[in-house]
Image 1 (cartoon, rainbow, N blue to C red):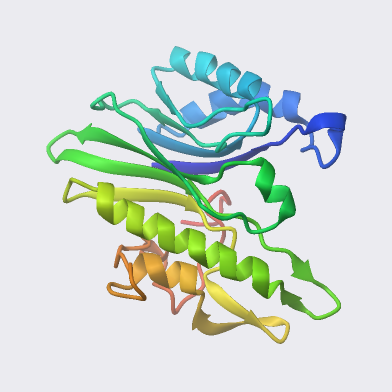
Image 2 (spheres, one colour):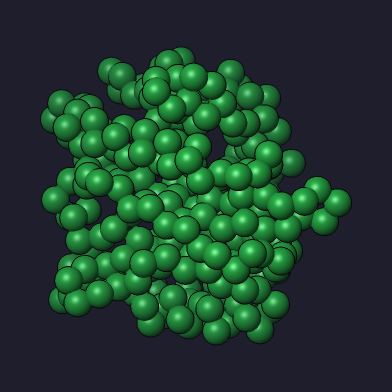
Length: 238
């Protein structure tokens, strides 16, 4: 399983545009396929043209595409795109969050995309791809905008509740860009306390919708009490 934020943002007039989009699009399908992942969850595939280009190329490597809400004349879609080499039931479910974290996020429809796929020797599994809203950092106050953070927490709660409502299988995987570190930021540093968005996913019964799921990356690297040796894409991470 692979999750990857593609950062394929190309807004009108080029304001805030991502860098080297065309160059990255040329190599992205090959590099994604070379990982050997059976399931690939992408975020920030905002432009329909970029999305279609990725779909066409990934099909050559044997991947089936499952896409969310696309770009329209009034704004971008969810930016979510799932590729699978495994059999699916052919259905795609999507939920878009009811709130935006900040003004520029109102032009997109962030949320979650869900499919069901058949795992050999295991059975059917629910697979989700999600992306929460961005939160601005206030440098003068050395803190994140509390209003933005509250709305991101609302999104996380909606995500957890929607997964509980739609998950029909005993096995499920969530690939998500939380747009936050898993530890709380306070007085210029990350402290031991966990962010509420993260707790909603890993602690059963947390708040009104705690999922109690396992963080696969942390589980393989000593748990939340130990920092991982490196990012997942770095060679010195065993």
